[in-house]
Length: 114
Length: 112
Image (cartoon, rainbow over all chains, first blue to last red; front, top):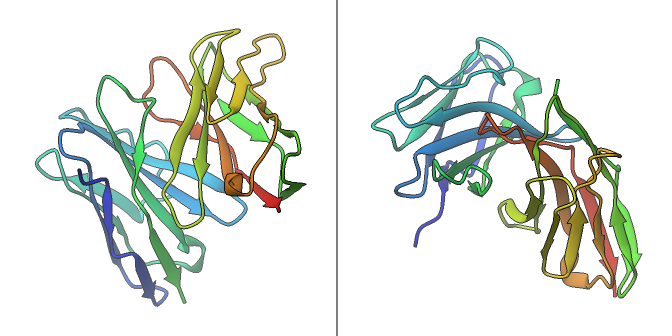
């Protein structure tokens, strides 16, 4: 079966531009998570969606970051006015509601802000 | 706040050596603890977990024991292989929260 997919796999953008990163979770997984993996910073939680509940946005680093999840499936992470410090690998994961311990990760989108 | 601290890498060992990667946590309450692994070119995946004190998680020859008294969850393997080369992340999840808090990761290199 298909795993978590993310697109694009690589994105190079200029400082100040907006970018959109997409995540397709595993079918049937109601929980979806975004993380950021920066060099030397490990894996940083950004935002979490669970079913129709309000998302947990506690990890978003600034108001330039936002995410939405349409129809309880696909999610888009948007970064406005990108900065060089936004360069990182952005990972998406999904899980069943009853097994949040077992998150399945996508391959990530490598974002480079020039 | 809740956090995880793990030993910095890279860790380089010869094949068949004994491995320990240290991990300690800070949490208000009693979290579930995990080790995730990221093999080269692959996505992050759950390696093992323990949900309460004194539980031992194990998988693929790796083990980790949940030690409440020392707030630790050290990863061990008796005899490593070249194929174990990867980045290992210690992590926790609080029982009323679904998000996982990860450590910074430890890169492991195993030499043949």
